[in-house]
Length: 311
Image (cartoon, rainbow, N blue to C red; front, side):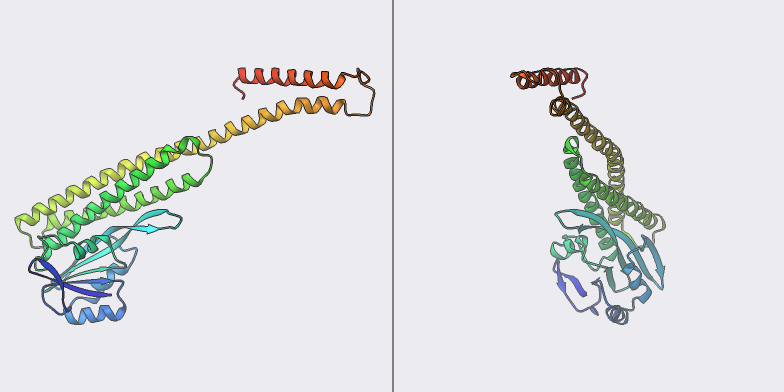
């Protein structure tokens, strides 16, 4: 899908892709879409295709006065049964003389925010600043999703003490996987942004440099938050596995104790149920005495087991 926008009177308006100084947004484009954009804008086809590889890492490349920046942006993935996981996908920013082009495999919230609620300072004419604003918005989404991960972790933690199934452990594993994706992507994004700051690959004014510093601060904060959550989650998973094992042992101990107590009356009644001569078998109150004695023995056994914390 191809859409094109241009800042007019402080707002984004839809325009033709050949309009100069516009923003062209490509979402899961076909080969024909890429060729059309390349023909009308002069963009390198290999630069347009690079972000469509789901395994593409964050990087920056320059050729023929065209600059391609690839970063990884966070997305939410619905796994069904009200379970949400998080992943990252490449987002390409291609800056050429008269166009600013974004390429992604699917709609991403980072760009949707600019389309639906553009900032007052957003301008398709100021390509460097627009790219930095996308970087900043990406960092804020990482922080937002990390807070959601932390909240979900706390919800699972509150139910640990009564857990005996693997369901919550699997949920924690999914959260840990999301954190690994975030950590890897954030560190790669930080390298790209520091390279932009260090090498001056993009023309920047003083305000742009300040914005890039803010972006780096947000990214570093997200990295620290992801590291803390990863360490907490790792320790929680170890504790969770131990809790499941301990809760299962408690249940097995209770069931074993109940089995032992029930075995006593079973043995006694089994003896008097045999077709052999036994003491007091002809006495009319033998059955009542057996029941009373059995109850007393079972009660004494229960008392001893509770004193020894076996029940």
